[in-house]
Length: 455
Image (tube, rainbow, N blue to C red; front, side, top):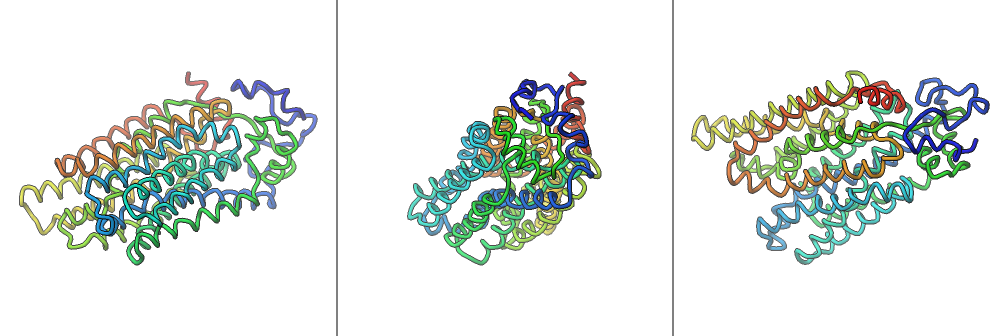
């Protein structure tokens, strides 16, 4: 086989497979149940497990600020504005990581990009651990942000490129599952250890990822793209067995950008970063119990989303999820409205906690993971780097806007802020219903054909 003969792959066409018929007459479609041998499926699972160590790192970074806010402000004498800057710096770093993630991933490969991102995360965690003032604290937060900005792109892309079609949705959803697991672990550990020890704990998944990368193959699609034929054949045989056909996938950049904008516009990073403060503002004596409930509810609902991903489909799952975030924001907004009007005050904490937990459960089951899965499915190989960077940049730009403005918006009007997020949830339902295609059960090639026929 000569990969260089198939330049149409780089142009986005799929007239010829990577493996010629005469060389692989018995080859079946990539991702079909029969084409993935029993021995190789174990390598697919191992590769996914290693990759999502990066997702766990992502979660620990994002979840770090919520349980540590009071302690860091007290120890380092930070004002609310200074801590808000610290909390949001992770998203600024992630935006820069998003801008560069596609180029890095295309230039040095998916594994190389994961190694670089992990290096930034390790540097950032150590800077936070040794911080004596706001400067080193902010630099550490920025570095971890850059690392997870790259991770947020490369992990779902890597999983989508190695997974067979019948498992791709479920395996890709493990990215979000491990993100929320990492965030939940941060919440829980932050309740029992101090903020410096929590930063040190963030090194554990980074080390696991670095070690694990030594034992898994590079993405066959990337190896094929850069013309490394022997390594391509070896990686493909490890992931699919001896017979596999690997090809290109399609793009609709607007869908990816729109989904990420919708995901962030419902306010997840504001509510997630400052959960404890929301519960205290609603009248609870301490936000710790609510924060623990928040942490515990994410994992089972994200796991449920992973199970439903390849059963109910992507579109219905996102729309149901957005309907749930609308309901949660509406209930929480009503709670704060009642508080402002001094009405039914005994119900305010109950409604606020219920609203936030409904919101988190709904977001976790669909909106948290599905946009990343679809992003990893719809971009073609020749646009994956550029388009993927754009989409991840939009995600992190939205995350920064939400996390930085949340405290100020809540100071302006707590019910108004939550009703705003509820409105964005309704717009998300409309966007998905009108523009987002269903990708459940389709090979990446079939997704391309579907999108091309709609143009």
